[in-house]
Image (cartoon, helix red, strand yellow):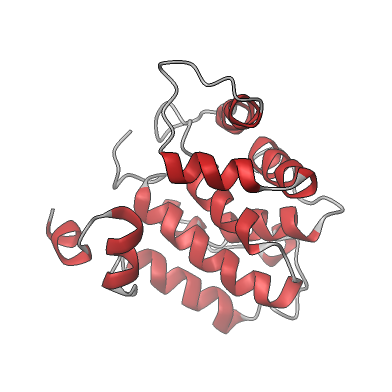
Amino acid sequence: MEPWGLHGIAHWWRVRHNGLLVAAHTGADTRVVRLFALIHDSFREDDGHDPLHGLRAAKWLARVRQGELQENDVACASTRAAIESLDDVGFDQLHRACELHTSSITTDDATINTCFAADRLDLARVGFRPDPRLIPVDRALLTDAFIDAAMRRTVGRLGWIENDEFLQAWGIDVDLAERG
């Protein structure tokens, strides 16, 4: 997978940002939202049709939780520690959000719905305006201005973020990434 492709690092960062904005209204567990942003598309085989990528991510999460990572499993220590630190409820939310994010529109859980919303608010990257009917959070939040702002972040690549936070999280300088 290309790190700057449709489902790469820039997408993950926008999903993280969208999720934190939505979580401020839904009360979602922001630890789960942040981990979802990082993991939900990380097991894609490519940027095309890959309906099983969420299930692969969920299975990997289960291996992390059970301490069964194999030699070929990639997991940085801080991500693994963050997953392992989740209580049972948080882990179940993350697991279900990753597994279901492409096959379900809504659940009965505000944190999982926040994860779904965060991802769907970044659909402009593939040429679609996010549809509030497919975003499982309070419609009052999903104003045209809110959706327009999400779309501007998508079109703006990484120009909208704070370089220091991105550099700390990824070890990548935004200005260099934008040129590369």
